[in-house]
Image (tube, rainbow, N blue to C red; front, side, top):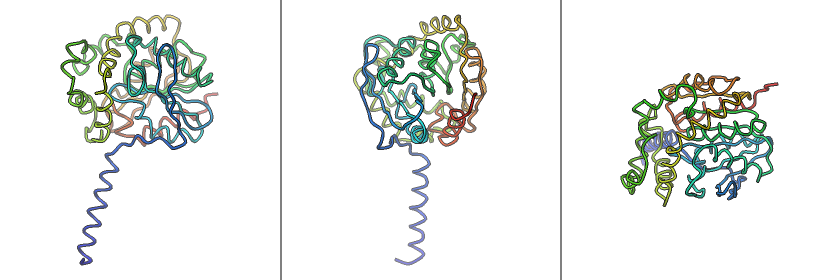
Length: 310
Protein backbone atom coordinates (compact mmCIF):
# COMPACT_ATOMS: atom_id res chain seq x y z
CA UNK A 1 0.00 0.00 0.00
CA UNK A 2 1.33 3.44 -0.89
CA UNK A 3 2.16 5.68 2.12
CA UNK A 4 -0.36 8.32 1.01
CA UNK A 5 -3.10 5.70 0.73
CA UNK A 6 -2.25 4.28 4.15
CA UNK A 7 -2.35 7.73 5.75
CA UNK A 8 -5.70 8.43 4.12
CA UNK A 9 -7.10 5.18 5.46
CA UNK A 10 -5.82 5.97 8.95
CA UNK A 11 -7.45 9.40 8.79
CA UNK A 12 -10.79 7.88 7.78
CA UNK A 13 -10.61 5.31 10.62
CA UNK A 14 -9.66 7.99 13.15
CA UNK A 15 -12.54 10.23 12.10
CA UNK A 16 -14.97 7.30 12.27
CA UNK A 17 -13.79 6.35 15.75
CA UNK A 18 -14.04 9.96 16.92
CA UNK A 19 -17.55 10.25 15.53
CA UNK A 20 -18.60 6.99 17.17
CA UNK A 21 -17.20 8.07 20.53
CA UNK A 22 -19.04 11.38 20.29
CA UNK A 23 -22.45 9.86 19.62
CA UNK A 24 -22.49 6.49 21.40
CA UNK A 25 -23.72 6.14 24.94
CA UNK A 26 -22.74 3.07 26.89
CA UNK A 27 -24.59 1.46 29.76
CA UNK A 28 -21.54 -0.22 31.25
CA UNK A 29 -21.31 0.02 35.01
CA UNK A 30 -17.96 -0.89 36.57
CA UNK A 31 -17.38 -4.61 37.04
CA UNK A 32 -17.35 -4.06 40.80
CA UNK A 33 -21.05 -3.14 40.67
CA UNK A 34 -23.54 -5.84 41.47
CA UNK A 35 -27.17 -6.15 40.43
CA UNK A 36 -29.81 -7.14 42.93
CA UNK A 37 -33.57 -7.66 42.92
CA UNK A 38 -34.85 -5.90 46.03
CA UNK A 39 -38.34 -6.55 47.42
CA UNK A 40 -39.84 -3.31 48.70
CA UNK A 41 -43.30 -1.91 49.38
CA UNK A 42 -45.18 -4.66 47.54
CA UNK A 43 -43.00 -4.76 44.43
CA UNK A 44 -39.48 -5.75 43.34
CA UNK A 45 -36.91 -3.31 42.00
CA UNK A 46 -33.92 -4.10 39.81
CA UNK A 47 -30.97 -2.28 41.40
CA UNK A 48 -27.31 -1.66 40.55
CA UNK A 49 -25.03 -1.09 43.55
CA UNK A 50 -21.34 -0.26 43.74
CA UNK A 51 -18.63 1.86 45.28
CA UNK A 52 -18.13 2.71 48.93
CA UNK A 53 -18.71 5.68 51.20
CA UNK A 54 -21.80 7.84 51.79
CA UNK A 55 -24.81 6.68 49.78
CA UNK A 56 -26.13 8.42 46.69
CA UNK A 57 -29.41 7.33 45.10
CA UNK A 58 -29.88 7.98 41.35
CA UNK A 59 -33.44 7.98 39.93
CA UNK A 60 -34.10 7.94 36.19
CA UNK A 61 -37.04 9.24 34.17
CA UNK A 62 -39.37 8.23 31.35
CA UNK A 63 -38.00 6.86 28.05
CA UNK A 64 -34.92 5.68 29.94
CA UNK A 65 -33.97 3.36 32.81
CA UNK A 66 -31.30 3.38 35.49
CA UNK A 67 -28.83 2.57 32.71
CA UNK A 68 -28.71 6.29 31.90
CA UNK A 69 -26.63 6.91 35.02
CA UNK A 70 -23.60 4.75 34.09
CA UNK A 71 -21.22 7.70 33.43
CA UNK A 72 -22.20 9.41 36.70
CA UNK A 73 -21.99 6.13 38.63
CA UNK A 74 -18.44 5.56 37.37
CA UNK A 75 -17.46 8.97 38.75
CA UNK A 76 -19.32 8.90 42.07
CA UNK A 77 -18.27 5.35 43.00
CA UNK A 78 -14.80 6.69 43.86
CA UNK A 79 -16.13 8.01 47.17
CA UNK A 80 -19.81 7.02 47.35
CA UNK A 81 -21.95 3.93 47.57
CA UNK A 82 -23.96 4.39 44.38
CA UNK A 83 -27.50 2.94 44.27
CA UNK A 84 -29.29 2.90 40.90
CA UNK A 85 -32.75 1.32 40.73
CA UNK A 86 -35.15 0.99 37.83
CA UNK A 87 -38.38 2.61 38.97
CA UNK A 88 -41.51 0.57 39.61
CA UNK A 89 -42.81 -0.83 36.31
CA UNK A 90 -39.83 0.35 34.27
CA UNK A 91 -36.68 -1.28 32.95
CA UNK A 92 -36.08 -4.65 34.60
CA UNK A 93 -38.16 -3.92 37.71
CA UNK A 94 -41.46 -5.66 38.37
CA UNK A 95 -44.68 -4.22 36.89
CA UNK A 96 -47.38 -4.37 39.56
CA UNK A 97 -50.89 -3.28 38.54
CA UNK A 98 -51.00 -0.33 40.96
CA UNK A 99 -48.77 2.04 42.88
CA UNK A 100 -47.59 4.48 40.20
CA UNK A 101 -48.42 7.57 42.22
CA UNK A 102 -45.17 9.12 43.35
CA UNK A 103 -46.05 9.02 47.06
CA UNK A 104 -46.12 5.22 46.83
CA UNK A 105 -42.92 5.16 44.78
CA UNK A 106 -41.27 7.38 47.36
CA UNK A 107 -41.99 4.62 49.83
CA UNK A 108 -40.46 2.17 47.34
CA UNK A 109 -37.22 4.11 47.76
CA UNK A 110 -37.48 4.14 51.55
CA UNK A 111 -37.94 0.36 51.55
CA UNK A 112 -35.04 -0.07 49.13
CA UNK A 113 -32.70 1.88 51.38
CA UNK A 114 -33.95 -0.05 54.43
CA UNK A 115 -33.16 -3.32 52.64
CA UNK A 116 -29.63 -2.07 51.99
CA UNK A 117 -29.20 -0.77 55.57
CA UNK A 118 -28.81 2.82 54.32
CA UNK A 119 -30.12 5.42 56.75
CA UNK A 120 -29.47 8.59 54.72
CA UNK A 121 -28.46 9.45 51.17
CA UNK A 122 -27.73 12.13 48.65
CA UNK A 123 -30.35 12.11 45.91
CA UNK A 124 -29.89 12.76 42.15
CA UNK A 125 -32.95 12.61 39.91
CA UNK A 126 -34.17 13.34 36.38
CA UNK A 127 -37.63 13.69 34.82
CA UNK A 128 -40.12 11.29 36.50
CA UNK A 129 -37.31 10.55 38.93
CA UNK A 130 -37.64 14.15 40.18
CA UNK A 131 -41.23 13.42 41.18
CA UNK A 132 -40.39 10.15 42.92
CA UNK A 133 -37.40 11.75 44.59
CA UNK A 134 -39.42 14.70 45.86
CA UNK A 135 -42.08 12.38 47.29
CA UNK A 136 -39.36 10.37 49.04
CA UNK A 137 -37.65 13.48 50.38
CA UNK A 138 -40.93 15.02 51.55
CA UNK A 139 -41.89 11.88 53.45
CA UNK A 140 -38.40 11.18 54.82
CA UNK A 141 -36.81 14.59 55.24
CA UNK A 142 -34.20 13.37 57.69
CA UNK A 143 -32.88 10.78 55.21
CA UNK A 144 -31.83 13.11 52.37
CA UNK A 145 -28.60 15.11 52.78
CA UNK A 146 -28.53 16.86 49.39
CA UNK A 147 -30.92 16.74 46.46
CA UNK A 148 -30.21 17.31 42.74
CA UNK A 149 -33.25 17.62 40.44
CA UNK A 150 -32.82 17.78 36.67
CA UNK A 151 -35.06 19.26 33.99
CA UNK A 152 -38.66 18.36 34.83
CA UNK A 153 -41.46 19.96 36.88
CA UNK A 154 -43.17 18.69 40.01
CA UNK A 155 -46.93 18.05 39.84
CA UNK A 156 -48.93 20.60 41.80
CA UNK A 157 -45.88 22.75 42.55
CA UNK A 158 -45.50 26.35 41.40
CA UNK A 159 -46.82 27.06 37.87
CA UNK A 160 -47.94 23.45 37.34
CA UNK A 161 -51.28 24.37 35.73
CA UNK A 162 -49.54 26.63 33.22
CA UNK A 163 -46.97 23.93 32.46
CA UNK A 164 -49.80 21.51 31.67
CA UNK A 165 -51.02 23.88 28.92
CA UNK A 166 -47.77 23.58 26.95
CA UNK A 167 -48.63 21.65 23.76
CA UNK A 168 -45.23 19.93 23.84
CA UNK A 169 -46.44 18.08 26.93
CA UNK A 170 -49.50 16.43 25.35
CA UNK A 171 -48.14 13.07 26.48
CA UNK A 172 -49.02 13.94 30.08
CA UNK A 173 -52.66 13.11 29.16
CA UNK A 174 -51.87 10.33 26.70
CA UNK A 175 -52.73 6.84 27.98
CA UNK A 176 -55.33 4.18 28.41
CA UNK A 177 -56.12 0.98 26.48
CA UNK A 178 -56.63 2.67 23.10
CA UNK A 179 -53.32 4.54 23.40
CA UNK A 180 -51.58 1.31 24.27
CA UNK A 181 -53.02 -0.27 21.13
CA UNK A 182 -51.77 2.67 19.05
CA UNK A 183 -48.17 2.26 20.19
CA UNK A 184 -48.05 -1.56 20.39
CA UNK A 185 -45.30 -2.67 18.02
CA UNK A 186 -44.44 1.00 17.40
CA UNK A 187 -42.71 1.74 20.70
CA UNK A 188 -39.59 3.03 18.94
CA UNK A 189 -41.63 5.49 16.87
CA UNK A 190 -43.38 6.80 19.98
CA UNK A 191 -40.16 7.13 22.00
CA UNK A 192 -38.25 8.78 19.14
CA UNK A 193 -40.62 11.71 19.51
CA UNK A 194 -39.32 12.32 23.06
CA UNK A 195 -35.67 11.89 22.17
CA UNK A 196 -35.95 14.12 19.09
CA UNK A 197 -38.19 16.95 20.27
CA UNK A 198 -36.66 17.33 23.71
CA UNK A 199 -33.02 17.39 22.54
CA UNK A 200 -31.02 20.43 21.54
CA UNK A 201 -29.52 18.14 18.89
CA UNK A 202 -31.31 14.79 18.37
CA UNK A 203 -28.11 13.24 16.99
CA UNK A 204 -26.67 13.31 20.50
CA UNK A 205 -29.18 10.71 21.65
CA UNK A 206 -27.35 7.83 20.02
CA UNK A 207 -28.91 5.10 17.92
CA UNK A 208 -27.51 2.48 20.28
CA UNK A 209 -29.34 4.15 23.18
CA UNK A 210 -32.59 4.36 21.22
CA UNK A 211 -32.45 0.68 20.33
CA UNK A 212 -31.58 -0.28 23.90
CA UNK A 213 -34.46 1.61 25.51
CA UNK A 214 -36.98 0.76 22.78
CA UNK A 215 -36.38 -2.95 23.44
CA UNK A 216 -36.99 -2.49 27.16
CA UNK A 217 -40.16 -0.44 26.65
CA UNK A 218 -41.49 -2.99 24.15
CA UNK A 219 -41.46 -5.71 26.82
CA UNK A 220 -44.89 -6.99 27.94
CA UNK A 221 -46.59 -4.48 30.22
CA UNK A 222 -43.83 -1.87 29.97
CA UNK A 223 -45.78 0.76 28.03
CA UNK A 224 -48.81 0.23 30.28
CA UNK A 225 -46.62 0.92 33.31
CA UNK A 226 -45.07 3.93 31.62
CA UNK A 227 -48.47 5.45 30.86
CA UNK A 228 -49.46 4.79 34.48
CA UNK A 229 -46.65 7.11 35.61
CA UNK A 230 -48.38 10.00 33.79
CA UNK A 231 -51.93 8.95 34.70
CA UNK A 232 -51.00 9.43 38.37
CA UNK A 233 -50.10 13.12 37.96
CA UNK A 234 -53.43 14.44 39.29
CA UNK A 235 -53.00 12.43 42.49
CA UNK A 236 -49.34 13.41 42.63
CA UNK A 237 -50.34 17.09 42.52
CA UNK A 238 -52.67 16.63 45.49
CA UNK A 239 -50.05 14.69 47.43
CA UNK A 240 -47.35 17.29 46.74
CA UNK A 241 -49.58 20.10 47.91
CA UNK A 242 -50.16 18.16 51.12
CA UNK A 243 -46.41 17.65 51.55
CA UNK A 244 -45.77 21.37 51.11
CA UNK A 245 -48.47 22.21 53.63
CA UNK A 246 -46.05 20.64 56.13
CA UNK A 247 -43.29 22.98 54.94
CA UNK A 248 -40.78 23.23 52.14
CA UNK A 249 -37.74 20.96 51.93
CA UNK A 250 -34.81 22.43 53.83
CA UNK A 251 -31.86 20.31 52.67
CA UNK A 252 -29.52 21.89 50.07
CA UNK A 253 -30.99 21.48 46.58
CA UNK A 254 -29.44 21.93 43.14
CA UNK A 255 -31.94 22.46 40.31
CA UNK A 256 -30.38 21.84 36.88
CA UNK A 257 -32.00 22.68 33.55
CA UNK A 258 -30.83 22.25 29.99
CA UNK A 259 -30.32 25.65 28.33
CA UNK A 260 -32.65 24.62 25.46
CA UNK A 261 -35.18 23.08 27.84
CA UNK A 262 -36.11 24.20 31.37
CA UNK A 263 -32.96 26.26 31.82
CA UNK A 264 -33.08 28.63 34.80
CA UNK A 265 -36.83 28.00 35.12
CA UNK A 266 -35.93 24.72 36.78
CA UNK A 267 -34.55 26.57 39.80
CA UNK A 268 -37.45 29.04 39.81
CA UNK A 269 -39.98 26.22 39.99
CA UNK A 270 -37.98 24.30 42.59
CA UNK A 271 -37.97 27.30 44.92
CA UNK A 272 -41.69 26.75 45.40
CA UNK A 273 -40.76 23.43 47.04
CA UNK A 274 -37.44 24.05 48.80
CA UNK A 275 -35.79 26.84 50.78
CA UNK A 276 -32.10 26.32 49.88
CA UNK A 277 -31.95 26.10 46.07
CA UNK A 278 -28.89 26.59 43.86
CA UNK A 279 -29.30 27.03 40.10
CA UNK A 280 -27.48 25.11 37.40
CA UNK A 281 -27.86 25.45 33.63
CA UNK A 282 -26.15 23.09 31.18
CA UNK A 283 -25.22 24.97 27.97
CA UNK A 284 -26.07 23.54 24.55
CA UNK A 285 -28.40 20.90 25.99
CA UNK A 286 -32.06 20.07 25.93
CA UNK A 287 -33.82 17.69 28.30
CA UNK A 288 -31.47 14.69 27.98
CA UNK A 289 -28.58 16.10 29.99
CA UNK A 290 -26.71 12.84 30.58
CA UNK A 291 -26.79 12.07 26.85
CA UNK A 292 -26.28 15.53 25.41
CA UNK A 293 -23.63 16.94 27.76
CA UNK A 294 -22.51 14.12 30.05
CA UNK A 295 -19.15 15.55 31.11
CA UNK A 296 -20.55 18.96 32.06
CA UNK A 297 -23.50 17.38 33.85
CA UNK A 298 -21.36 14.93 35.82
CA UNK A 299 -19.00 17.73 36.82
CA UNK A 300 -21.85 19.96 38.04
CA UNK A 301 -23.38 17.14 40.10
CA UNK A 302 -19.99 16.10 41.48
CA UNK A 303 -19.19 19.68 42.56
CA UNK A 304 -22.52 19.97 44.39
CA UNK A 305 -22.48 16.54 46.03
CA UNK A 306 -18.95 17.17 47.28
CA UNK A 307 -19.64 20.69 48.55
CA UNK A 308 -19.34 21.33 52.28
CA UNK A 309 -22.70 22.72 53.37
CA UNK A 310 -21.66 23.00 56.99
